[in-house]
Length: 148
Image (cartoon, rainbow, N blue to C red; front, side, top):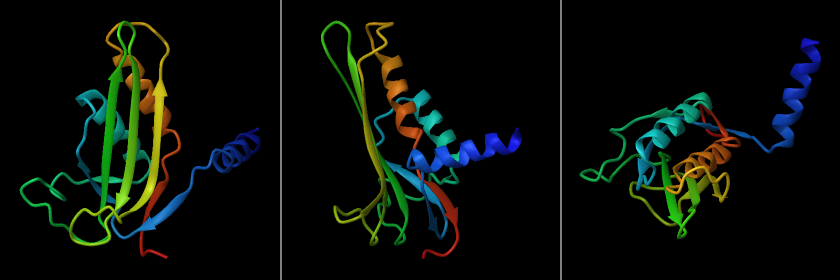
């Protein structure tokens, strides 16, 4: 029975498109984080499960200069609507190509999710959290080591 379950999990990880990549440190920092505190904590936990290491000292507004190949994360969160709001959450994990953030930086993972349901509250925060849950489901695993 354990073999069947493990084969099922292995098959599903390939079928869902979850991939892995090698990175020298797997350390990341947030740039322009628009998530609230609960969502940021959840994202950090999910990234830690995937092998990422949060480093708040990596990039700051006072010191935007960093090492080449550093990972940084840009998030977006938009609540829109009149009565029942819908929520769009965007997640972009990038690898820096130089010492500063550039539009040419390679995206390791980029997805967005729009949630309109369930309509439990008028504020829509639960829809944002569910959209973030959708995005974290297929984040690539980061393996520490030399880049191939």
